[in-house]
Amino acid sequence: MMKKRNLLKMLLVVTLLVTVIISVGAQKNLYEIGAGPTGGNFYPMAVGIEKVLAEKMNCTYTTKVMVSGGSTDNANLLARGQVDLAILTQPDAQALYEGTGAWQGRAFKDLQIITPLIPGHIRLVVRADANVKTLADLKGKRFSPGQMGSGESTFWHIWEACGYSQNDLRREYLDLGGIVDALKDGKIDGAYLAGSEPYSSLIDLKTSMGEKIQIYNFTEEEVAKIMAADPRYAPWLCKAGTYPNQSTDSTIIAYHYYLATTGELPNDIAYLAAKGLNEHQQW
Image 1: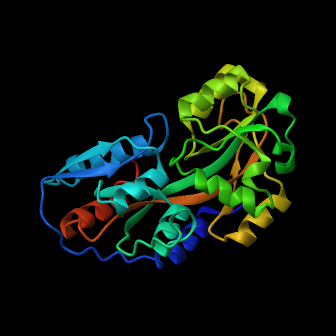
Image 2: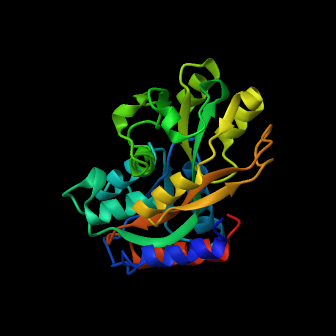
């Protein structure tokens, strides 16, 4: 399994793709942070960033957390100037900057990274009665990659890297609450849940469903294909006991989140955010 230090080394390579020099923009008093849905990881992360700026760094500017669909939505909001800071996944940040994937031909070169945040985890959860042992077993199953704009493009990256197409799944684009309810009610067989450990919605699922809901264990062959297609990803061990009623280890996929902005953000806010988040790691 990849050690944390190796993941950090990978971060350094990715961060070279974007500049961290923040130019001085027009001054204003309120700066909005694109977060995510309230039941996911991005929202509390954004609240933590807001608290670090206000309480630890005595930032004189006011920041406000904006509920959004997630990483892909945040990237679009940032590019349109509707938020000033945003939490992005590693794949979405690079795709937006380069003009690939969902932003094909629409490269946003004003994207700037303030600092990497905590590792994110790509996990699939499946109902035990769906009998999913490999990704191939998901073909034809009812599966939710999340809601549009939530960062579901990351799931498609790894799915397609393993040789499958979107049409191989019976897709249900649900928000986080809808995913939890649909899994409990047996309306879908599996779902993509991305976020750092421990993930609150998965705690809910494992507490209420026990062994009837499982964390998918990526095979060595699948991990190799994913990393061959995109070395930004790496295997991560979700150890037994991380969640209620989890009796076995599961190999999932790791990547990183970033706090991103544009050249419109004042230098001092960018500096305080980078300094504060690195000095106060328990935010």
